[in-house]
Figure 1 (tube, rainbow, N blue to C red):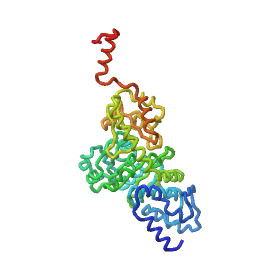
Figure 2 (cartoon, rainbow, N blue to C red):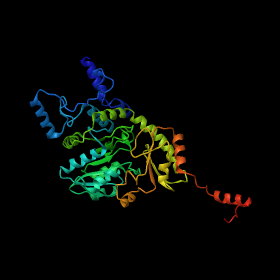
Figure 3 (cartoon, rainbow, N blue to C red):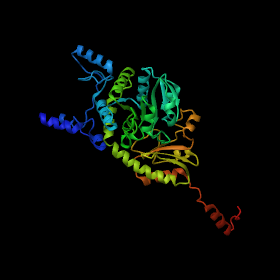
Figure 4 (cartoon, rainbow, N blue to C red):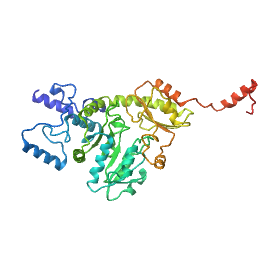
Length: 411
């Protein structure tokens, strides 16, 4: 490829592109020049080098600022080419300078907390509800952090000199409550806002554009999209990415290269999957809202493929009654999943705190997949059990029975 062609290629690669285009091409822009179509999977844990002085210099540089070492890879805990492709792609989708991937969403959150604690900033301000294990990690102080729980209006007053982080999740797990990210970011002042964007994905919102400095994903969910990979990722600026890489190197919470490959593949269909599942979810939410067996439906203003709803009767009977829908924890897969948060995803949260955050004992959370809406509704309808009589129907039934002599009208 001549120089002019190379420059033209670089211009195309770096020009602003639509989200759908970035999802397909980000992290893969160099493949055609290498004569490749699918990205390679690099499974090496270590890499040979005959220049140990140069290796020492590169390791010293990494220890200084956590930047990706220039040149060939060194060791799997320092970085992996396949994982780097995914990190590049996710940063492009979220509109940040960088992203750093981990073995799980909780490993990613732990790295953020450790990075801030290492700077003497152990205090966290957080808004409930959060994912149950995130709530537990903060509340239990397992990493030496201290948390102040507040509502969005109380964030500014809750800040302290040692506050290292403000954390929100919007839409929140499992109630789908939303916060005004721009207003929250303003309330944080100089303290970084960490927004968990797992439910929305960059298809529906990009928190960095609204002032969040850190964007967290359980990549196990929509980014992977097929229920076969576990991962976490933080999108952020390059300076903080360096600190996260150093924590990842020290603690070993690295993402396996095969998982990185599956995540990169998952991103290519992310916009299509999210939009298709969201359309089905909106229809199901409307039907549930009109159903007398349901007391309340939670569905976010920004849309999405997640629904939460509260039932009149036993929620466990619904879990036990589905056949097409899969009764399982997690979310974001191509198949529809349903679970009872008070029993599973948020069981670890204190019951009073859980209920105070709106997670009632009759709440069910459903992650809508790519099945046909009528098939999903038929399964839900059956699992929800018999419908109660419509208003006036009971009286009409009694009168009909009275006329037949079966029961008196006063019965």
